Image (cartoon, rainbow over all chains, first blue to last red; front, top):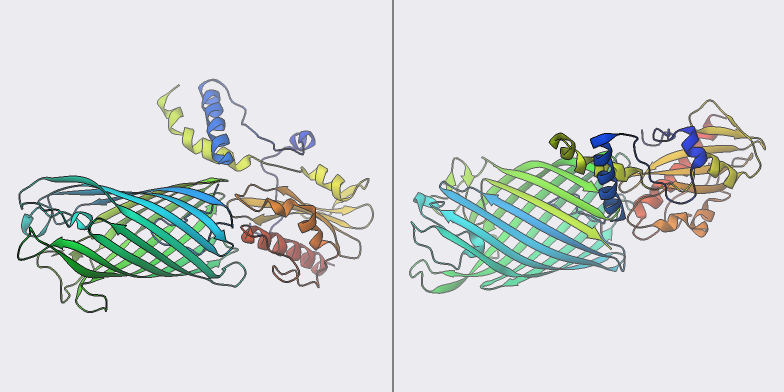
Length: 332
Length: 148
């Protein structure tokens, strides 16, 4: 395995003799339909290999790997949130991101954020309840709520202090302001990364502190909006092993906590998510997908809204039973 | 074409991309590092004695996405004569193929630090590749020294 001398399993002696100093593309010998499939596969492979990346190995958890100075990457995210208390609930969030390596240890990015949702009898006591990103919308308890919106613009800076490849452990600081209609958030992270087994196994840990303001309908008068404080305090861990060339797989675990304040008082929710992740990284193209299920470990807190805790699952705000995130990126 | 053939198309496309680029075959790397020499297998995988008393070793190291294959020529006195990158398919860091970066290894022995950031310069954006190539050369030198 790693560190052993390489056996040329994909080359014959004849191929070696005929190899040129330029790039060599090989294709298996086959006939008929299989041959046509192979030709198309080779064409797609050319795109994939012409395409590779400083990619996100996890869908939710960040690592300390950054773009080199002067390099760019575009990423497209899709997050599907599914099912609350009952009834119907789906939300699809999209993010389109451009990243740029500002320096060897500093990366900047800008995001465009947008979302679509449908909800019906999804909330406490079977009432239709718009999800958090649509919290400034009004919906009657028996309405079928269906909406889409541009949710805002985000900026991002990641500064790497230590590299897991040269310093033994990776450490980076992250900040991401987001501004949208009736919403402002400043998400901050401390990112830790440790690699094992010749860097084939990656473990990343994130601590997040994200205070936000939302202008939401007043409890007393839903036609009046009030700015409210909320803070998300999250812990995340991702573990992924590169089991063959280009492919890694593992799991991600998140604990997301919400407070109705900026100072860790008035805790409202704490949810736990766990699920598998898979990642493909090519020369310029990558994709990552993670599916997370909420674990039944939630409990009541001082500001928990009645009816949002069901069978030890918290289903308030941006908590749901299942979420799935897909990211794809292209480096240039 | 049957539907079953199409099902495997994306998988085949991605998997074939793993065999895209080779810069040197074994024979080409042997000729580049030891021109005019002849090679005899030592009995160990991918390790040859050269006719001038040195060694030629092909080592595979971990890259960001795929393995990197490195040819290492070693003088009779145990120092590095030359290294060549046989395969490299990463997003960044093609500078590992530059003669100036590879020249840092010339003259290194099993007793050299061979440490990225110390006696071997890092390449921004290819730290993992630079580290593993450096580690690979050190591993080969120390392995040969240990085996006498």
